[in-house]
Length: 329
Image (cartoon, rainbow, N blue to C red; front, top):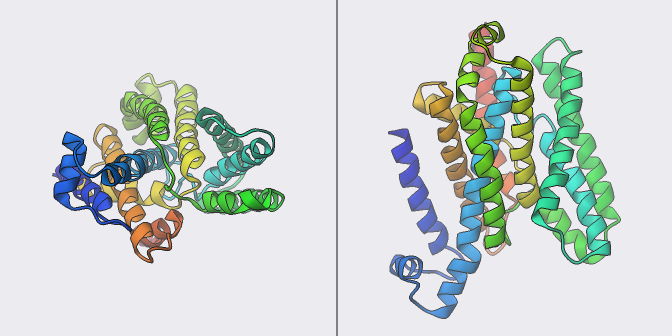
């Protein structure tokens, strides 16, 4: 039932996203333009060049972010862990900003895979630091504080680098650093689909070990799970998915924590074989809704996507923390 609701929501939000904007497009025109490639040339251009790529990228990257959050929560055995809270997205943003500034000064074009590689390096740097801290702090609360501090440091370095970019590029870099799905192209859709699709398939292949690991490390070992390889795979996959999101849309807050929690609650299960595709679909729909609000709430001014995701995601995280404390009490 949850999957059916999410699929219906995806279809409805897709139509609303195409329908709404500075140029209103009727449902009939949308159907003809998508399925028959018929209609006014301007309408076709708006749908196929501007709105559809943005919709698909928000769907793919939203799902990737929710999956990254689920993997990190599995790794740290805590539902509050996520790429934004632990500073992983900020680490990716820092290295991508550095690469963009260098290439903007010395070259006209930066390939998508270059940005993903840069974001992956930044994600791994932040992740390794958080892992080093996790071996020394006594509880998860201190680890989250360490992750937040990593995020602040990386954000400070990023802002410092942006300050020294050329004036014509500062606005674009600053807008990207706050998170946005605007300006997406079909080539972006293709790259996102390949990278995140591979990440999704590999995550699905880990569903049985994840299920065993959720029962405890000793239980997983007794079933033959190579814990060292498994934990390395979780970190690598979560970093790859976070890197792809950050490379194209900048850091996006709270999706990686809120969506897995909501999906598990709606489905009434933590079984990875069900939760993994649920997170991918739920994260995509969540980001599509947030992107729609970011576009239309104060049109023609467009909000940063993280502003909207924080408004909806932060209360969920606060509720999670309060409910966990009550359960312990």
